[in-house]
Length: 308
Image 1 (cartoon, rainbow, N blue to C red):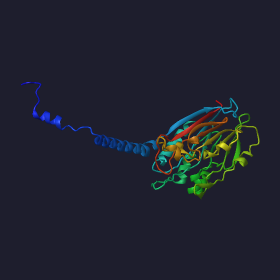
Image 2 (image 1 turned 90 degrees about the vertical axis):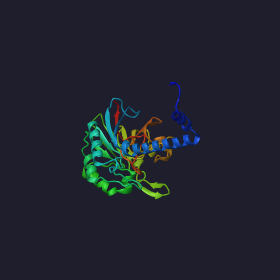
Image 3 (image 1 turned 45 degrees about the vertical axis):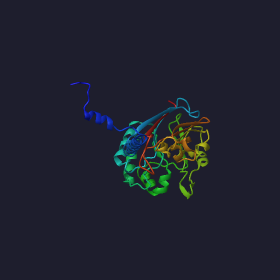
């Protein structure tokens, strides 16, 4: 038998093999895109929000004395509640934060979860507050309030923090540290506290009144929930710390800057920002809001070393 010969079956298989037409190519591409979108949605909703990363910054801003070392742990936008920031996840966050052994811990508001048209499992106020109470630092744990605290459960959040003796800085400043290492820790009220409709808000923030309480030449750290106030912060403030934006939360190429909850778009969305020698660090936060998903900006605890 001639080994190069082919039988009828083989000739039939070659004859009926489908050609890659434009229609088939588009259909295959659409299927791949649908599969990719499904996988991305699964990752954004079920995987990325459940992680926690540690983001470190080391800096000596112009108005912070060189050699005056201070370490700070920043927890922003906890949004305690299911499906992602369940009580075990809150406990894991606190464990990781406590392991940093920082000099100071600051909580930048938005303590409870709220979603738009998505079911959630709340974490009772005393439970998330009790976890935060485990944070122990020589210079204390200090909090400010965020817009969701004002909009959805102001009384409950205030009561929960008071119940575990975590003070709220609301348009006031305190002098911390021992002699020769002192600094002012200032916190302002929320800038979006009262929704007025049509995208307008009335805040309870008083930046000039807060800074007027600074009575010495010691450096100033400023806590704000929304970073939009940063253009008004004077260079008397060594470092401003903010949350609120979640780093964009869902970072789709070309689209996400338009959905950052800031009138400045991506300008103050995330990370270390320097403008006119003034320094701002915006945390990507931990929880989620509006929709229970994150993409491209994992939950984070921020650790800052100043003057080291």
